[in-house]
View 1 (cartoon, one colour):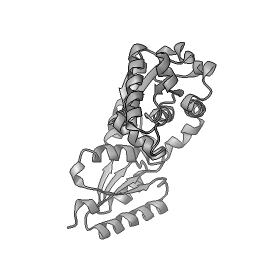
View 2 (spheres, one colour):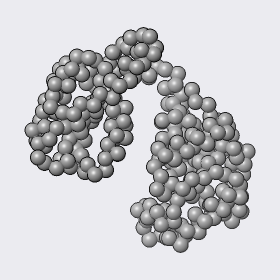
View 3 (cartoon, helix red, strand yellow):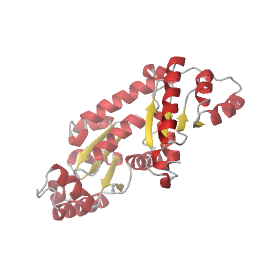
View 4 (cartoon, helix red, strand yellow):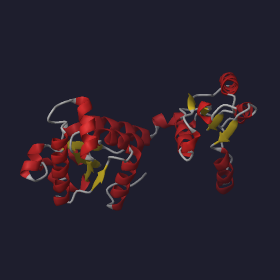
Length: 280
């Protein structure tokens, strides 16, 4: 039998496959010793013809790897599920454990309709999320600040390349937050105070910091050999930024070893704690 590193993992869905992939990765993360797995993302399996193609891919992976593939599925059509269940694979139905208990509790039968998420494009929450993304892009790195910050749900502050932009976009995409971000620059450190336009939005501020070594590494990739990327300058900026945020009572988080998902979860917790954001 071949090693686990040669095993193929399928993420199969009748929709985008994001749910299957996210839950599947969360489960696989509990098995770091399993080695590197081949990953196959298979969305929009919404017909028997596509199900047959998917079944063929699973069989080919079984023959090539010499071990059973792992299949994470969020398929809802019973016929499609039954078709793939017949293949020689570990089939993990991520909906199976939840549909039955929900049906019992709610007292209604599930629709078993494929692609229910397709209707989201016309929903109010989807439109709000698109507006949040557009707002976040327009308010990246200090762009279009001033009165526009009245609409912001959160304003991230921190030195350049500390993770503000990707975190802002994740907050907009995942939670529908209008997230602006503002870089702290040497002039702010010399004044020892926040930029004037941020003072009236103090309760919306959340800071990101990072280790000087990691910051220097990131900046070297952008501007190698520059003063901007030097370890000495990075140490100075990080120290000054932390002191400024502490002095101004801006809550902050170290992003060095923290994923964007974790950073965003901490920010959401902070917002809910201070009643700045109410989950829909």
